[in-house]
Image (cartoon, rainbow, N blue to C red):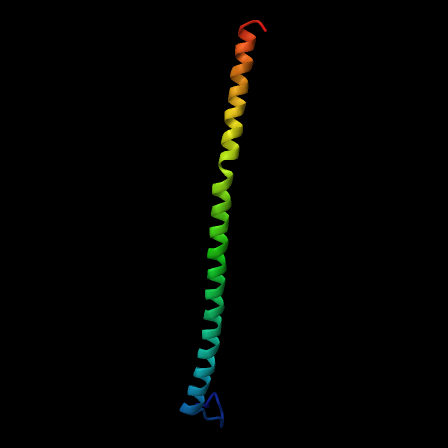
Length: 80
């Protein structure tokens, strides 16, 4: 059976060093993900605030349209 690495030998020190390098990269990616999550949460909060501020407009428009319809019907019924 042939050795897949051939004459190359990898010691515990090389594995440890590579593991530390990969661990550092994972930590940097984790920090970036945390930053993105914080940004998304901030955007979500801002969107919710905008949505809360806008809800009366369609409701007010519906009430005004209904009031206009009632006034038009009253005028029509009175023979106006």
